[in-house]
Length: 386
Ligand SMILES: Cc1cc2nc3c(=O)[nH]c(=O)nc-3n(C[C@H](O)[C@H](O)[C@H](O)COP(=O)(O)OP(=O)(O)OC[C@H]3O[C@@H](n4cnc5c(N)ncnc54)[C@H](O)[C@@H]3O)c2cc1C
Ligand SMILES: *[C@@H]1O[C@H](CO)[C@@H](O)[C@H](O)[C@H]1NC(C)=O
Ligand SMILES: *[C@@H]1O[C@H](CO)[C@@H](O)[C@H](O)[C@H]1NC(C)=O
Image 1 (cartoon, rainbow, N blue to C red):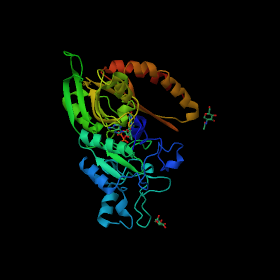
Image 2: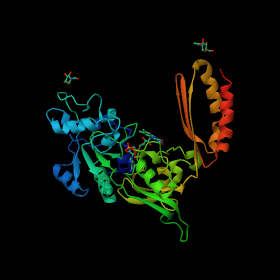
Image 3: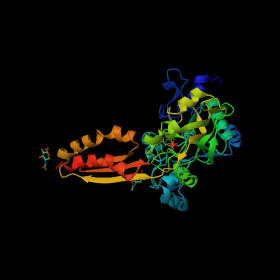
Image 4: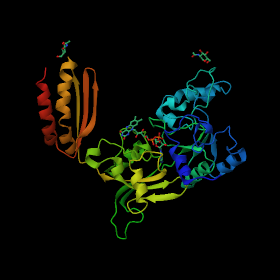
């Protein structure tokens, strides 16, 4: 089959948000943008799938996570195991046939959710095959096979994506979650930097490392890394490629500001190094362009920063007798100070409910007296309110 370069590129793009529904080729004006479906002659035969499987360390035929809880596949022992883990992100992360938000496992009203033995189990949006990539070559071989055969590819790391972009019907699931190498360096120099360039503190991360792994190791190395609030989100997938905000972003920038280098497999199957010295356009695109858009990141290198000497932590709970009256005034007093606070390094989270507001704020590397010069005027102002 002849493939236009744009189609190759689209093999990755379309795994995402664009075409979730299973559309027949005739639905497309050109017939060219739709992926091949198992019901069509273009679908590879068993021998081709088997041969492909040999190049990726084995292919996992993928079923929905609760498959063995449904007739005619019901298996009592397996179903009990499934029920133990079903509602936990840690368990879901390790299932080829699951993502974190189960609605994305459905196509329309067809899926296989829950444990009702007699209800029918449909494949829904769960990919048909999973490649558990352990090497860069596995990733390259998968991308090439999907492009050559015009098969939809869904890149999955932890499966946390709120918009369901790590799962797609009739697809191959390229599962990058098990490449877990992590290496701290005090003098990392990007590949291709001019001779004699000085190195900087960095952590080299395989595509499947989660934030909780990095946070633990960073503590041992007495450094901090800009990462997210949720420990089970991946470090190198959707988080950083879409920007990646962190409680320490006012101090050290977004995750995307901290990338020193990516190794990435592009839609032509090539492994590329992207940094400030080579493939700079790709490097730029990967720092904000969003997961699953410009290639498969197989390794990321992020800056490390010296450990904070101290962190002030301010935790307040405010209750309102009459929120209609008080809340607008409090928000006004709070929000009008945020630019100033942020520039001083404050950050954190604020929750506003009907009669309640919680403030959880951090100020790294400052003493208590300094912290109070921000907090005291704010609380002085709101204490005057009824
Ligand atoms: C509880 C919770 C808290 C969160 N807190 C924060 C936060 O503090 N700050 C913040 O910025 N975000 C936060 N997020 C959002 C989070 O960053 C996104 O959901 C992110 O997309 C998850 O990325 P993932 O790789 O772990 O998940 P996945 O669902 O596996 O992947 C997300 C997207 O990236 C693609 N992708 C995955 N791996 C790769 C790869 N190696 N190469 C190319 N594409 C890839 C997928 O195809 C998909 O499009 C939070 C999410 C949750 C669920
Ligand atoms: C289980 O599924 C069957 C078949 O769809 C349905 O008739 C029944 O009401 C379901 N039971 C429960 C408890 O939801
Ligand atoms: C709360 O404040 C609003 C606005 O001032 C007022 O209209 C309302 O009556 C107050 N409600 C109560 C229960 O006091």
